[in-house]
Length: 175
Image (cartoon, one colour):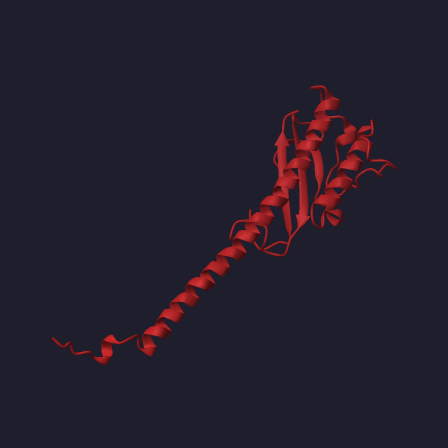
């Protein structure tokens, strides 16, 4: 028997090849977009982990000095106030609360991107009775850290919020 071969069964037409190329390109573009977004999440996660570690370090320093009592005044810093002057040696932990806080601020400014410019206005360490409400008294210690990112890259913001070039980490704990 001799089979009849038509041109239709010999291979792909040019249109079929173009459709396959377009579909492949769409898939590759989706993967590239996903890769870019995952890098943003990784970077945000790393910065938040650094901020959390810094805040926890400060809490432990305060707990060690307070021995379950009120937070020593040398560790408090309202928003808008400067941190104490940095001592000559931060390699060894200083004994005074103000010097420990100054060394901590130096380390925070070095580890978080753009934080040195934000130490005065965006960082605060205070007693608090309610979130983001520093008070002279309160049984909660509130620590806020901040760092710079490109506008819109702070991933904890709601979609309705305007993009801001500053990310913040807020820790509230009882001492």
